[in-house]
Image (cartoon, rainbow, N blue to C red; front, side, top):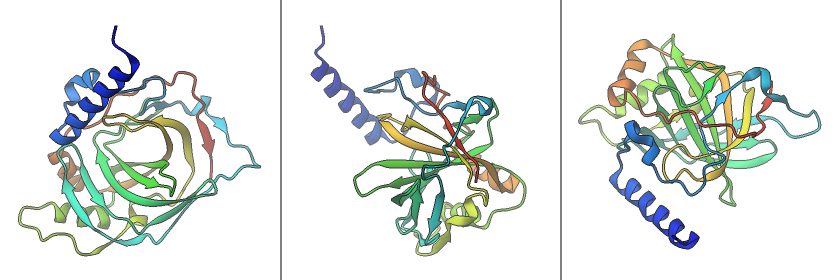
Length: 236
């Protein structure tokens, strides 16, 4: 019988192999390695079952230094990713700093069973290493200037990113969210990640959405069981 230590080591080695390979097989997600599997992401957010946040607890989502230098824009083999580290956030009374953001198609989270064409994941990190991911839904509509800047950086022959981008144009003005504890959505699928999914969608033009889809028509993990976890709703 395989010992727990050996099983954990094999899981880490397999996860490292996934990371080194870069590309993920979204057609066979059941083969992805995970050390834990009871609090995974993404989920379907059933709005009628979400619990209303208590009035006496920190709730807000505040972003500052939204105009931030872009360190790198790349197609990393499983997502379009932007590295940027100047934007800061105060989330439920705690300080975080942006590490990177990337895009999934179609949206990984669903809201009452509905998926959006794209979902952006803004990965924030606290000083103690804790991760908070802000999920943003994108739908077709008015063109998005920040999205176009990212797409231009991905064009063949484009110069390395040495400019700024306004993160605020990729976030909805309404900062209400659904909060739950989940995981990373790519291997090693680490749990104890704080999720803040904003239901108010942001627009991109259809050509911009199509341009993202030209990189990945599908790089979204399947919806995972909630397994009794509470989902908290904060309405800004």
